[in-house]
Amino acid sequence: MPTPSSNMPATTPAPASWRFDSKHASLLPTVTGYIEACPDRYFVTLTTKRRLTQFEFSAAIGRMLHRVNRELFGTGYTRHKALFLATFIVFEETFAEQLHAHCLVGVPDGSLAYKAHTKWTSVEALIKTTWCSMDHGGQMDGQDTQRIEGFEGVQSYVQKRLWNLASIDSVDLANTNIPTVPARAF
Image (tube, rainbow, N blue to C red; front, top):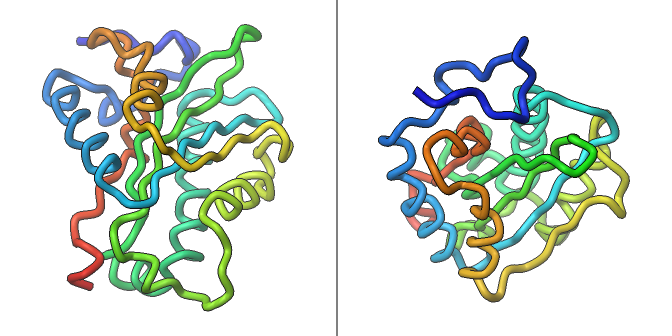
């Protein structure tokens, strides 16, 4: 059984449902492959104002993703749970031993046609402003959101510390998502 990530204090272990085993590790190519196939892909780095445990950081990212999905997809997300962003999130420690998150975000093909509001807000700006508006979100200049052009390089950067089963606990299982219903079927 993998040990808790070094990012988490011994007093706050990750819930058992969040710990990866070999079954979960085999799903990583599926998740990243789905995001790679999305026409709009983004690389996001999120930081916080204060020190958070991995569990607290994951919960904060979940709240942020809920707000972003609700803004982008409206009832397609809130009522039907059919449309949402594809995400793969990995936590990493800074030299000051503070967590930050690297995220691969994919917008499923055709899903923005169901955008809730006609006023256009770019996905990059929406993610960044939503995160910074939350009480734990970092300063605007501390967040990075970029469109992905060369997916393989970004993918290997995000997965740079995932070399064995023990290190895979840094993957945010609670917020790693693949939409189950294609946008065209909605």
